[in-house]
Image (tube, rainbow, N blue to C red):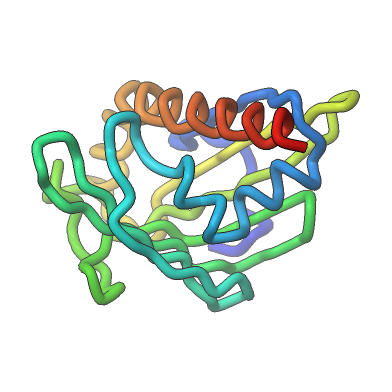
Length: 174
């Protein structure tokens, strides 16, 4: 699949949120480790470590701990970086060293998901549109991904609430 293949499709997962912050700020907090560690991840999870190499082929690698104490690691490998407008990367669950692993919630979850994130100016704010689809996945993995869309929407709602709160805090501090 190429970047051009990221057209709407039935199996795509799409989440969209409008933020009361300029695209430059929304971009910054999505592309700098010091900011990502303040908001990225599901509600209730705590940050335990990470690294960021923002370039095509570079990786954002992060670890979190859920309220029950279980550690979870993930990674984004960047493909397309168009400053202030677009980030495209391959998302995978990982181990603490950055190697790809199976998702803890499903043995049939795709090993890789292509995520295309668009940052669109909206007056003085920004619309963030996140579109994902399985990459190099079997039919079983594609079905598992599609079946989990509602849960992913709930998870991203908490993550994007944290982003919204973080952006509001940054604006107050300016």
